[in-house]
Amino acid sequence: MEKITQNKLAVKIICVALSVILWLYVSYQENPSMSKTVRNVPLAISGEQALKESGFSIYSISEKSVDVKITAKRLTLARLSNRTVSAVINVSAIKDSGTYTIPATVSSSLTSNAAYYVKGKDIKIVVEPIKKNTYTVEADIAAAQDTSVVLSSHELSDEKVTVSAPESIIKEIASVKTEQIIPDKNGKEQVAKLLVYGKNGKVLEGAECTPAQVTVKYSFHDVKAVPVVLKTTGGKTISLPAENTVRIYGSGDAFENAKYIETEEINLALYEKGSKIRTKLNLPDGIMITDNSSEVEIVLESEFFK
Image 1: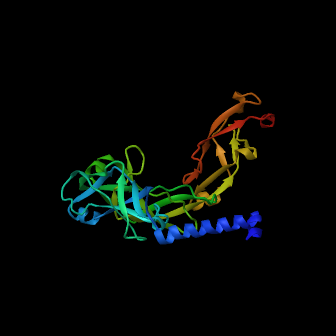
Image 2: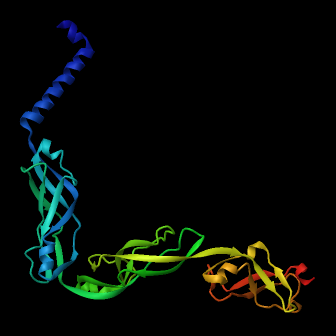
Image 3: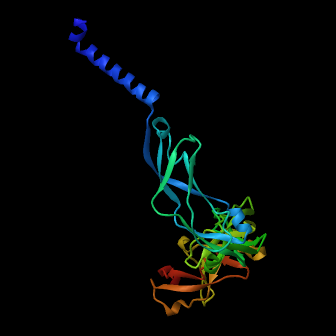
C-alpha cells in the first residue's frame, strides 16, 4: 500500500477510475431530470387539406420555426435536437377567414416522457377564402447552349392555367411562367414546372397551378457564320475582314445558298481613307442574324479606294 501511495501515476489512475465510476453511477442509476432549450424547431402544419375543402387557405404564418424548452431525463435530453423534435399546428378545425392564434404541439419519436414548452411569440396565422383565376402561361426559354442552332419556335401543352390561392395573393399575381428551360438540341421537348410571379417580379408562395406543369415543345434553326461584303455604287464588292463576320440563321433555299451578306451600296467618293462608318446589311428574306443586329461598323481601309 505504501508503495502505491508513493507512486503518483498509480494515484492518478485510481482517481480517474473512481471519477468514471461515479459518473456512470449518476448517469445510469440516478439519471436526473434536466432542462434545455432546443432552438429553431421547424414548424409543420397539419389539417391543410380539410381547411381547403372548407374553401379556405393560409395566407401567412408568423413563425416558420420555434424555440422549445424541454425537460427530460438527462440521457434522453442529450439526444433531442431540432432534427429529432417536431412542432405542429393543426388548422383542420378552422371554418372561416380571420387571424388565429394556435398553440404548437411538440413531440419526439425518441421519447414519450418529456415536457415541452414553446418559448417566444405566439403563432398566428391569417386565413383567407380561396380564389381562382385563369392566366396565360409564358414560356421562359434560355438561349440554346449549342451555338450551331438558334431557337425557332415553341408550343405549350397548356396555354392557360388556373391558379388557386388566398384572396390577397390572387390580387398580387402579375404572371405565370414556366421555370427556365435550357433547350437541348437532342431533346426537342421538356416538362417544366409552373411558377407564379407577383407584381414585384418575385415568385409568390402559396399559389397552386392546375396543371402544375406543362410540356414545352420547341424547334431550331441551323446557324452558320458568313463574311460581310461591302457593296459600292460603282458595282465593286469588297470582302471585309474576319471581325465583320456575322452569324445567320433561317430556313429554306435562301439560308442554304447564303455564302455572304452584302451591305447597302456605299459611295466611297463621299468618304476619306480611314473613315469609320456604320452601314445597313441587306438581309435576304428568311435570313436573320443571331444577335438581331441590322448594321455593321466598317473602317474604310486605303485598299478599298484602289
